[in-house]
Length: 283
Ligand code: PAF
Image (cartoon, rainbow, N blue to C red; front, side):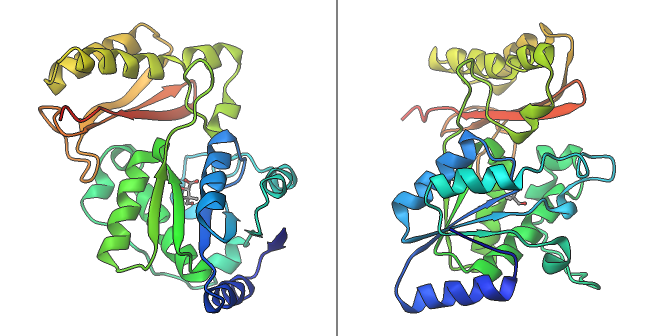
């Protein structure tokens, strides 16, 4: 496995692979890898000839009062995990490499980016779409793998790829959970033992919605009221949003036909966690 921090070097490797008809699978990450990331790497390994993973904590997607400076960084451990997964290249650019002095161009996917997390984290998604667009240009992958946990991010990247004719296929992989249901996240590392238990309320609330939907309830208002009630049973957890939306447009839906996305975000202490399920299509 080679660790490369230069954009021109990684682009040259991609172009050589492309000339040799090799398929590049790309997993963009911010490091602090967990089983969720590893599932993306394994999906990439299974579907590609060459696997590239980027590790870059992107300052543009953090708000001024957010956790950019304390975001967990564990490059040595991450590289050991990736080597064990037989990743071919790890791209570890510096901030200056990605955003050279004077860079002032943004990629904004309009409309959709101010829904769900975009509402409480203004500018977050334009930071994500900008860095992902740049990484796609640098890495030139055939396939790129994202986690369903960041469902809004996945919808926005898919839209950006369509809108801007990126020649890459986006593969969205299922959420990986702890045995008690908590969705894997690098931010789980911030939770103390009490908060770690409290955090499971997100999954319990989603399961309540799932059960009612399985019993035939289609009214989003009723489903959300039940889900919110479960969250309220854990007073230390502060709800940010609980919504049922179309999974492509992120627009709220009143009736849950057609595989709607049930998405929740909440603060456990200072830590903001997100989770979601996709309701089965009644057809
Ligand atoms: O999902 C993430 O870890 C980040 O948002 C991503 C896609 C690597 C962009 O910085």
